[in-house]
Length: 350
Image 1 (cartoon, rainbow, N blue to C red):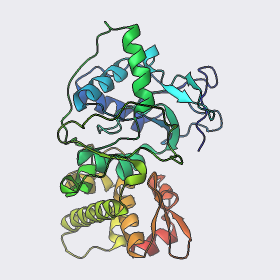
Image 2 (image 1 turned 45 degrees about the horizontal axis):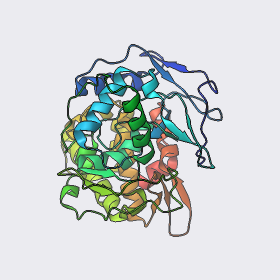
Image 3 (image 1 turned 180 degrees about the vertical axis):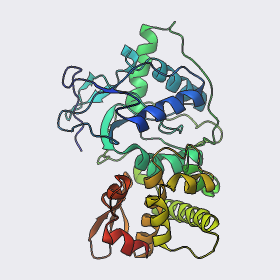
């Protein structure tokens, strides 16, 4: 993945409206309501030149998280939501040689503290899978990625010095953030032993490290975890818990305790994925319901077969004992589009 910075004129902004990208539009409105701030009147998506904008796929950049208290982070989220096209929304980006430049980007705020600002280093992920498989479970359990905020903090510091009097809306978010359906995934993680906060190694795929001051203690209730320090057992436990919750919800809807994969797929194809999420206690069940139902079930089924995630930031790609790769996103996409489920999906869920 390249850390290539783009100038503001590299690509024209793609307008996001309730008609063109209803899922993204609903996400921004919902997040603004949760934060108690006014949602932006206009939203523009600035894609990388080599990646075309497509329905349901966003170009997300990750903030660089380090030593930021939860209440300050909430203030920043609200500020970015209220001023999406202002100079303050222009994050610091990095060229391969380490040089910094400023580029304009859409600022989207997922329902979690750990990923409140999605800008800086550009990554192409579908929103729901990124939050469900990485950020959501950690954030809902009170963890935050310590190797995500250093560059952003430097840029933010310069902005504050340049405009110290600029008002910033503030509504602190709780430490145990309700990160949509990820809260169900994260049950039990809050008592896990905290990972040692270590610097990101040289091969970190998400950022070019800057020289920063020693880390201050985390705010009470938050624990630090690096991308490369996430124990795979955390994800296995989270996916298993989520799959059990989904099967339990389907069992309640069907009225019998034995739930087959075909039963879940049939309900999803009948348009009842939202009902499953709502029954399972998910927040915002209208956001990406198909992926949030089938994704954990596929992940659980593959892990039981000995598959493991290819990378902590690619939880949807699993590698088997024989080094074969299965992309669960590719299996879910046809169902999300209203088409026939792939035979492999039905086989894995059987």
